[in-house]
Image (cartoon, rainbow, N blue to C red; front, side, top):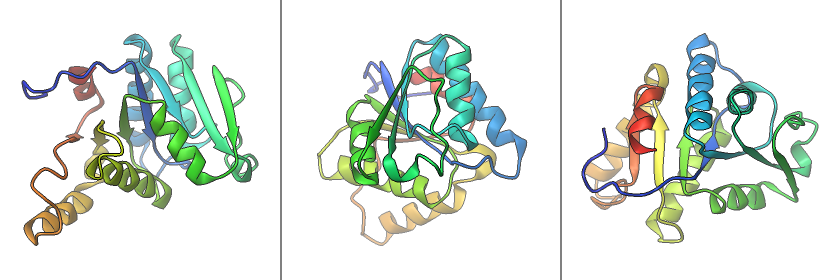
Length: 185
């Protein structure tokens, strides 16, 4: 549940997650729950534009429940990620840097589900942008199946050892279940 200081209205959310589904069905199940929640709350989803993996699952769930999805995909990944042709809007950009910038710039907040190194890259870029005051947006980390526990321990170590200020992670909200996101929407 959010603290009393949380007052931001979220109309759109950047979603960063894997182009694979992972080994446990819980990842897809939770991605589908999040997609349903976003559609029900009329939150526009902005993501990487793929139709495969968790990216495809959450985009399909939003679309199947009457929501709005904007996909932003670089030319390089059109064949790799099999661009999603059944979403509200698909934007093709030149490269990965432009993709991340467009996704995050169009969103009021960010949501990170499990994924690989690309997902971690996106998470750390948005954390860095907040730290540098390029943006000041809430970031939600869905810790499905304790997926991010080791990363959270590393972030705590970085704080303990003086590499992060006490406020560096104040906009990062760790969620254990999809329904916890509803408190913020």
